[in-house]
Length: 396
Image 1: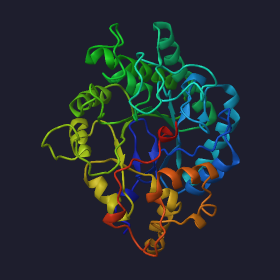
Image 2 (image 1 turned 90 degrees about the vertical axis):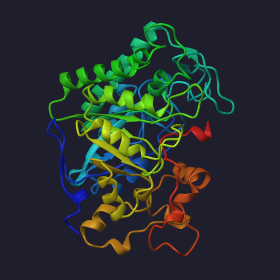
Image 3 (image 1 turned 180 degrees about the horizontal axis):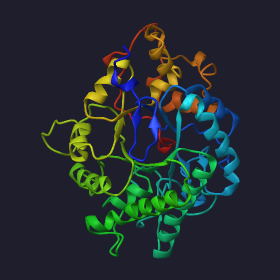
Image 4 (image 1 turned 120 degrees about the vertical axis):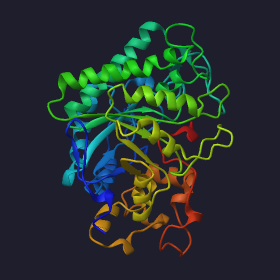
C-alpha cells in the first residue's frame, strides 16, 4: 500500500516540495459574494478538503472586473480582495497542503449582465459558438498590455496573500486560449494570424508573471499553466497545434503544465485514426522537462496509480474530492473501504458543499450524485467524459 508512487513526495525544480502527488483540481463553487469576496461557505468547503492532497488548486479568480466570467466567482482584481485571499490561503495550507490560486480573464466567455454593463472583450470581435453569446469588443494594443499587467498584479496579490503558486487558466476557451485559437483570434497585427503571433499573448503573460514572482516571492512560488488540447470550432485549435504550443510552453519557464481533459484515457477528437491517449502524447512532447498534471474520471487509488503510469507527474482529482474530502487520509490510514464514490443530496450539507454549488451539481453534474444503493466502488458505468467544474459556461 505505502509503496504506491502517488503517496511519495514530489519536488519542483525551484525547491517547492509536495508531500504527495495527488492534486485537488480547480473546481468552481459559485459561492463568492457579488464583488468577488470570499465567503465563509467557501472557506468551510476548502477547509474540509485541505490537509490530504499535496497541492490544492482553487476555483478560478478573475484578475480584472471586465474579466469576470460568472456570478459567485472569486476575485483577485483589487487589493480589497487581499484579506479574504489571505484567509483562503491559510485555510488550504493545513497539514502542509500547498495552496495554488488559479487566475484568469474570461474574455468573450461572459456577458454584459455579469459585467454590470461593460461589454465582453476578446482578441477579435467574434462571438463564441453558444446560445445568446454576445459579440465582444476587440482589444486594442494598449488594452492588451493592460491585461498583461493585470495578470502580474494578480500574481503579486497571490504572493502577498500567502499562496504557494498560481495557475494561469489557459483552457476552457477563456481569454488566454482565445488568443491562441484561430476561431476567436482573427487579428492581423502582431497578436494574431501566424502560430507565433497567436501564442504571443499567453507567452507575454507568462513572462510578466515570472518577473513578478522573481521580484516579490521570498520563498519557492510555482507558476502553472492549464491548457485544453483542442476545440470543436472550425477554424479552431487542433491537437497538433497544441502539441506545438506545449513544446513552446515547456521552454517558457513555467513550473508545470496542467492538461484539461474530461477522461484520463481520452483520445484526440480531430486526428483521424490516432487512438493514442492525449496524456501519453503530451507526456512524450514534454519528455520529463517539466511536471505534467492531468486527471479526469480518476477515483480509486488504483486509478490514481494508473494515471501516474500513463506518464503524469501529479494526478488531479476533481469530483472524487467533492464526494470524499478525506480521500487521501483514508488511503494513508488503510481505510479505503470507507471511501465514498457517490453522494446523495442529503449528504451535501455534511460535505460543506456551498448552496450555489449544490444547485450546479444537481443541474449540470448529476453524475457526481447517486440515487441508487450501489455505491461500494467506482465502476465503468460511473465514468464520465465531462470535465470537472471549471466555469459556469452552461449557465451564462
